Length: 193
Image (tube, rainbow, N blue to C red):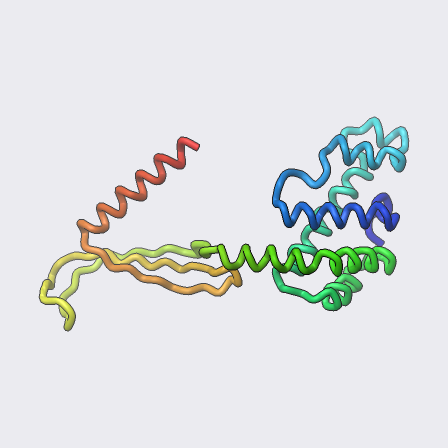
């Protein structure tokens, strides 16, 4: 039945709305520690208030993390409000909590989907793996220069949908040395950050 300290519908609806705003803006914490503590103060007993991380605050943080994960995953999978509502009912939360989360998702689904579409269209992929090989060409129908060493680089790149594609580049030793110098220069700049 989810965290008892965040289950009143108004609190859960506010938390879910704040999570959606956070996902859309991608800035800062959803609630500062002080704000979260002041929101939870009425539910904390004297023993919990004295500790640095009372169980109620830990449960509130867990609720925020869970809601963030549910909304992000639903947006990434482009779930309809109906699919989200069906999925959240299997989460083990109370029926009332499920209804609140489904209502907030239904209200925010268009904005979350639009943000996910922008993110997907602007993404250039992530490097999954990188291999290299040094070889000497001994026979080729495309070039007359043989017995010259070359470096083959193979990049495996995952696109936003996690589909992995392989891209290969072949370079002469001189081209590879220039490439390696550029990578070293990038590395030096990154170390200054």
